[in-house]
Picture 1 (cartoon, rainbow, N blue to C red):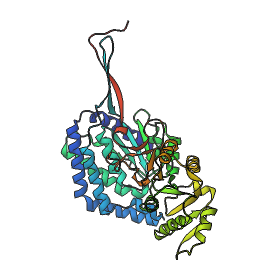
Picture 2: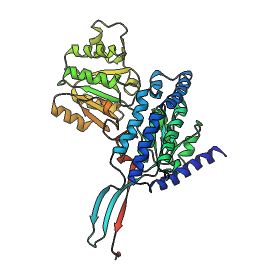
Picture 3: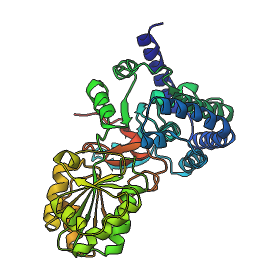
Length: 428
């Protein structure tokens, strides 16, 4: 059988499974999720062993340390996968929710209700926990999932998906095994072939670097929900609490630098005391951050004794537009909130941006005028995450303006249809 036939067969089976899923009750779906979670806990040693093989491959392939961090399944991350599935089971059922209910003058009652999307393709890199998060959320919302992870995580992805399917089958005989499928090949041609299956696939959601997402969006013939980059910012305003500002900026850059909601640029109001920028730099250097600063920032910092190992260089225009996903931070001094907003709206990716200030009017202007899916006031951008938003494990983050935007949970994995209830009405 050819690769094209294999991929078409997978898509067909997913479509059939999506129809079978409509017959499962909310109770059955939740019990399956609980069984999946328990199975991941029980099978944790085997999952970590499969992940060890992937890590060895990644090191031999020369993956960067941030990419290896995304790939690794620690004990805590395996436990978080099962915890996420249990949290999904506890969430309200997104299917069948009445969004609108109206009765026309002729007595015809119309209801708009949430429904599953159908077949959702998830294409992602490195992070094998996405396998459990994505498959679990799609299943909770009544969707079949086709997963295509990176070649560096193939062993981890396969065992996680297999563990979930086998557990659900044991719990519920009517669970369709093809509701969760992992593309078994690492051949890159599988992606355009899969995304040409418009008869069977309803939606694609890529998760990964910009090159992956752009490649998927350009080749897909099915709808794609996406974000290209996470060029996130923190702006420290002249009315900020300075210790709070340092804590927020350091957390947003260093807590986990290889993820899309970590900041790439820090903007500092030039009206702040000059020693504040130096204090901020020293704290960032303590966490191993390489600083790329504008002329004013470097003049201030160079005037202070630099700690051993401190890295400071001139920022380039390309840096403002680069998602480093590493301990590299661009810093600029700006003339107040207006210049900060202008800079962010020019260079930002529409993902997550934050202001630190005690001035409500300034904060409201910033939050109104920044064009991003999530805007924070006195909080780290690292909260842009479905779990942190109380959605359960997220399916992804969208910077699109049509349809889903920001962290995507269960509600964003549903569509809707209208139901009409009549008593013989006919249209004249």
